[in-house]
Amino acid sequence: MSEKMIGMTKKEVFETMRHLDNRKYHTLFNALYFDTIRHLHSQTTKDVLASLEIFSAVYTENILYPFVSDLIETNNKKITEDIKQLFAK
Image (cartoon, rainbow, N blue to C red; front, side, top):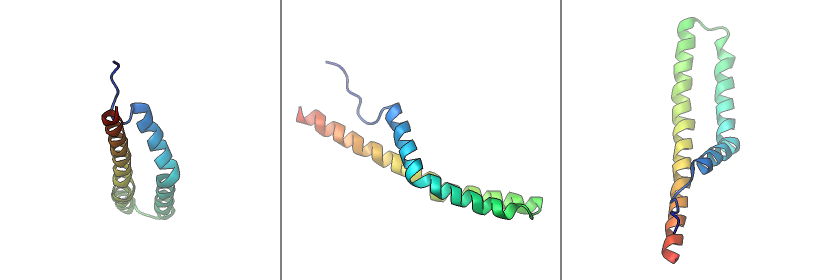
């Protein structure tokens, strides 16, 4: 009897990340990036650093955390499906 992995494989994780990125997060990142860049040309060094700090905070809160949460949720669904299949055997 061969062992069956429960949850997503590394390849499935990367495929899911690409799918989530293309579908949702890439658009959010581009909007945030271009909004930040638009204001940088006339700013002082101190203002640029403040803008980058804001970018980082917004990126983390609005893109990174939700992205990781979606990825974990997808894996949890896969784990649930795999366990149901194991019990069905």
